[in-house]
Length: 446
Ligand code: PHE
Image 1 (cartoon, rainbow, N blue to C red):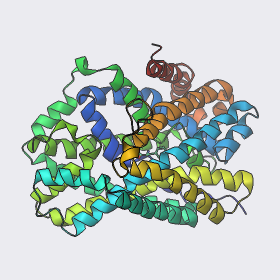
Image 2: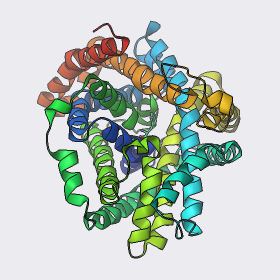
Image 3: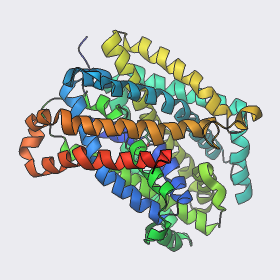
Image 4: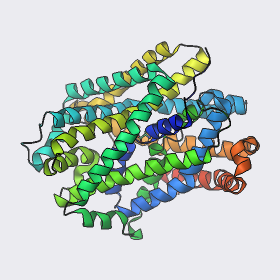
């Protein structure tokens, strides 16, 4: 059977944006910004995104598009040697990330139901916050929602590239953006808005810490879906002869906008209600119900919003699964249905310990894996601080040093010579070096 392709260029952009925009933007970015001092984190994040994220986004689109292969096959085709190990690392990352990502995806399902049935209408702010706490400790509920979420992802991936992934992106992404805009406008009207603008944008470089640099780099990879071949895979479904510069810029811009908008919607509530800083991983879930209670029409917007978070999480989860699935289809000759179901089940099972480690099983939640982290946090740390950046370094080196001639022959390079030179320079020297320094730092060597 011929390998599938996107229907249109817009289809690719929306699907790739669908992969990029997800829980990373709406859930992770705000709490990392919060725990790393606000504006300092945002500043470093933007820098990482321009110097590292954007060039690697182009590199990945290029690798996929020029080979029309899954991450492992793509490296093999471009340069038959050990480089395809990076593809393996990517596939492993897809496994690891989706397993805990789906747990949080499950949370969004539950919050959708809660807001739909008006469960928060009678609660005050302490109750809304403690509701999150008791929910994550309910092991049965954690497993149940994780299961439903995985089920939905498998359902979309089974439908294939056009009828599943592309369609989902085309419908869901524009809707998400509009709802986000409405929510930001609502948040502007709260009394904490001014304070949150200062907090988010007034530069305070003294707050830049090693930790904020490490986390912002990892977050940039995670949020842009880079370093593991998700974008390689999506790029591989592109038609030939399309320039990729604008696409890459559009995706990166859109993803960054959504992350900042998520902060603009969450922080005003935090300041208005003087919520405590320990909101951490619950920040999205324990703040928004309060905004919905306050705003006119909140009863409608609330469920609508969580519905869209679900969509954002789904389109990202789909790309995580598709990386692994595409490998089994291309290289092992499995059909899509078999590949999706078998791999989906394996990831579902790997998600159990994550689902139960935030309090569901007390012996498990008491267990520390990496540093002080429980199982769930350890997987996230492993993936975003290690696997994606390492994948990213090698993708940059590979495109900058090994196959830069091939890029030169691509149509986009010919038309945009100056820009191309900048990107190759970044890929050759700047991105790998920066990521490397950060990794040295994580290991404590630096
Ligand atoms: N970018 C997605 C998000 O922000 C997560 C993701 C990471 C998806 C890596 C694919 C690959 O939620």
